[in-house]
Length: 235
Image (cartoon, rainbow, N blue to C red):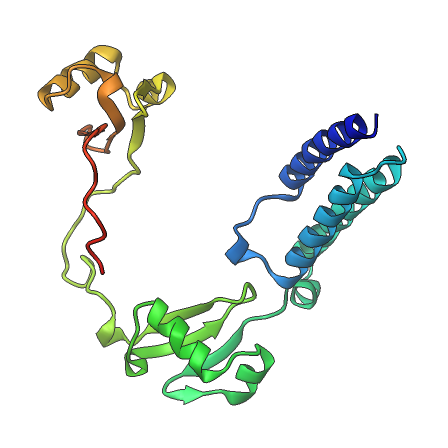
């Protein structure tokens, strides 16, 4: 009976946690601020207690989860209405480097040493800090880098080149299955798709791993391969 209770409570906690997460909103781990991280751990801990409740008193942890989610929503709403509250709950951005000047006090505030700073610069593609104009420490623990104007990549605007407005490609086939709603959204039909696949030497959609159509209505398709991939070529 206890085992059945654990199974039912576990399933219930997963379902409730899923809906509460959807209600609060999704964020990638790298985008979580301290407040979001603490709340995520707390709600998860309560859900675990709810799942392993053997005494049948699962109402208390359930109410606690709902209250925590409600508080998170309330504080999130308050933060959108007040800059001071937003800075209090999520912190504020800090200038670490600007115009060849490093601000040591801000390094202390964000608990970052120079070695970690240089590592994150390299991760962003800057091995020489002389190429950097400004570095800002964001509230999610990451740094944002603005390169010096002479070191940033040239854009069509810099070269005075007019470009077409691009739109993201639409996925039409995924793991051999045709996504008919996407096909209709792209303004095409099954006959057009079959014709395009034959032009690429593909007899049927089931052979395709993924296929997409771009804003110029050009189909790109990648077939499923049975051959083995090459070994590790990077070591």
